[in-house]
Image (cartoon, rainbow, N blue to C red):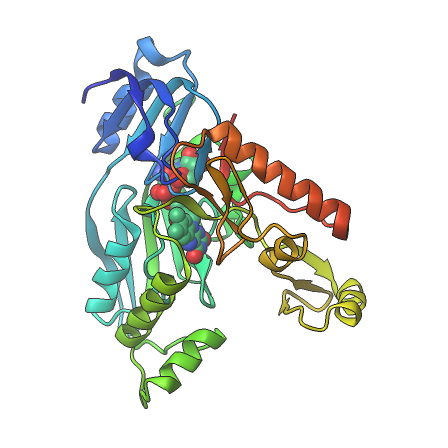
Length: 339
Ligand SMILES: Cc1cc2nc3c(=O)[nH]c(=O)nc-3n(C[C@H](O)[C@H](O)[C@H](O)COP(=O)(O)OP(=O)(O)OC[C@H]3O[C@@H](n4cnc5c(N)ncnc54)[C@H](O)[C@@H]3O)c2cc1C
């Protein structure tokens, strides 16, 4: 384990912003993590944990220690006739875990195929896509508190999961490091066709009895056709969450904008697409310098080359302001901002 000084994080965040970290270390085991957390030398430095860097925006150089979590390993932790508990290290690539499960016909996370990043970050925002959310199969996780190095297991309800949210984005933000995650998955999986695009593609491909491997393939092809690849153009996926508004308010919106889509959240609330709001404000494909919203997907803010984190952050606040002024709706960031 080697701590390096003044390292550029350009290749370690999918926005590709060129910021430096004062110190950087990559850890491969819980033991190494404890060693670095206990070390006197770095005890007074601010610490940030980094996975794949696909949901983070550094707005300036980081004056502390970045810990890259690369704890590997996937194993079957427990099983009965119907269920299997799979455990993965926080540094396992999320999509490798999905592939591992789908290859064994273990179901429950196939709709979450191809989401970038590492297993350890998946619970942070309760990753979700195409009609599935992590919390539906999440069993428990292991981790370590940064300040006293104590370990703790969090079960599903301890995590306070909600839409793109958990306890780790709130009370425990930058205080707790996830080291491994356990998911409870199905040995006899049913496919989840609740998302319109997935169902339509199954029909289009004339698959009579879709299996989870078909769903994985379809989700990957939809994602590739819709989302910009960070390897080609810097981005962190959706920059904002889709806002939740009351049904009454939605009714008023719908009268003025009949094309507005919505998703039921509960008996009183609906979610509406942030991308639609941004587009209506004239911000689809708008570019300022080397940053802007993607021409096909305005919810994605991109780095065309040499945008700084500050410039990307500034454009995000301009978008929030214009949506607030136009629609009286406050967009919330999905991306984790490091100021
Ligand atoms: C093209 C693209 C598409 C995307 N699509 C989706 C999508 O469909 N659905 C979705 O939910 N997300 C999506 N995302 C966002 C992102 O992929 C996920 O949020 C992912 O879980 C982030 O993983 P990461 O390892 O890259 O996290 P990072 O960006 O490295 O970290 C994210 C946050 O988690 C913290 N963190 C990371 N690891 C740990 C750990 N082990 N312990 C404690 N804290 C930790 C970090 O400090 C940071 O605050 C997309 C991103 C991109 C670029």
